[in-house]
Structures are given as C-alpha cells and as structure tokens.
Amino acid sequence: MCHRHFAQRGFSSISFTGIDIAPLAPGMDSNDDMNWRFVQHDLRRASLPFRDEEFNLIMIKDLSMVTPTTGIQQTLMDEYLRILKPGGSLEIWDGDHSLRMLLPHVPPSTKDDDDNNEDEEQIHTNAMGIYTLTRQTPLAAPQNPFLNDFNSWISKSLEARKLTPMPCTSILPMLHQESEVLTEVDCRRLAIPLGEVRWEREGVGGALSHGSNENAISAKGKAPELGRKTLTAGQHALRRTALMTVVQMIESLEPLLREASGKGQDEWDRWQGNMMIDLLNQNGTSWGECLEVGAWWARKKKPPG
Image (cartoon, rainbow, N blue to C red):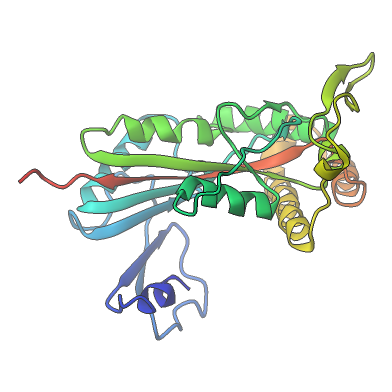
C-alpha cells in the first residue's frame, strides 16, 4: 500500500483523499492504519469540492472516457492546479482505447552507467518484456480482424460522445500548455504486447513483406540465434494480464460497441465468442498487437522569492 511505502521512509502523517462518482464499496473503509477519506462527486461538474492548494500530490487515473474533448478538460486542469500546492506534483495515468501493433524493431540499448536513470528504467522495461514508446517506435494498425472491428466500433462510439479513442497523444501537449504554472513536465509511455510475438521468437530484424492477401512478417534479416526471444514466466503473465484487460474492456463496453456495430444480440454473441477463442486460445495477437499505457507528470512552480 502507498501509505506503508511512505511510512517506512519516515512520512507518517500523510493523508489520502479519493474521489469518484460512485459510492464507496462495502468494506472499503475498514483500513484503520491509513488516514484517508472518500468524497463522492461527479467530476463533470466543474468545481472540485476542495480548498485552494490543499494537496501535495494529485493523481488522475483513467479519466479519458469521462472528460469530453471540449472545454471541460481545460476547466478540470484549472481545478487541479487550483487545489495543488506550489511545489506539489501532478500525475496522469491513462491508456489508449484503440489498439495498434508493434512492428519489428530493436528496443533502446543501455549503457554501463549506474547513475543513468533512463538506462535503469530501460533495463527494467526490457526485463518485463515490454517496450518503451518513443517517436521512433514503429506501429501500425493491428492484423487481427477482431481487434480491427473493435477499433472501428470504439472510435465511432467515442467520437460520437466527443471522447478520444487515443488520449495518450494529447496529454503531454495539455501539460506543456500550462508552462506558466508547471515545470519538470515529463512522461513515460509503454507498449505491452498481448502475447508472444512472432518476430520476437524469430529474432528482431524481420522485414514486412506485402503479399497478395495480407501483410506478413518475413524471415529476411533475421537476427542471430542469440537474438531470439523466449518469454519468462513473469513476462508471459504480464502480457496475459494485458490481454485480459483488453478482453474485459471489450466485454464491459458491449452496449456501446454493439450499437456502433449495428449487430443484433445473437450476432454480437457469435462475434464475441469467436473473438474470445481467437485471442485467448489461438494466440490471435502474435503479430504484435499491444496495449498502450502511459504516465505523465509535472510539478507546480513555487512563487518567486
């Protein structure tokens, strides 16, 4: 737990506040060793029920399906900055709802420098079997037909509600435009493959060839045998978790997706059953389809003097 992490480092007077539109689940208020409170509030209502400069840290998690791409995003940002203390930190965690596919590439290398934080992060990323997303990371539309269907329907449904299917591309510019108030703006974006990827197994360095029926990864330019990748149990578990996250997201969004698809209930049930078999039992994401997530952060400037 977060409060125990800080308590072990000598910060024992920390308090936590949670806010959500839904009431607190039964039994969630029974943690006696943490100083925390819960506030039930609809974030779409402009004013947050907190004092000016009340918090040292504000974390905003998975709100991209809540805040339309209209003025409310800026209104909420103004509210976050109002209730954040000078010197305090703002963190945003989110992920894209439309899925893409990683193309064959070599992850960034690391140097033998223990003081290099970026290298240390990359070592951990490589060890987890996931990929750091940069401007140079090659991505494309997924090969899997079920995920292509999902992309089409989720984009149609969200855009009709003035929501973005790919929020990860807009968060960093939103923070940068607050440069008069925020400093130390940075981010870390990750792509988690949804299963074992063919070009990893064959060795990074494959080339995309365009056949008459579909794009396929050819064996041209294979890396040496040492470049072949076998997933560890931990890496496999992480990717399976990402896959289950995607499957459960599709299940939970059935009303929106079925409406966008125009399918009746029986037709939808058949599509969903075939999708589950393909993704969960037939390694349907072996081309490199991935879940893209990220964290963005900044610090509120202290007044001069």
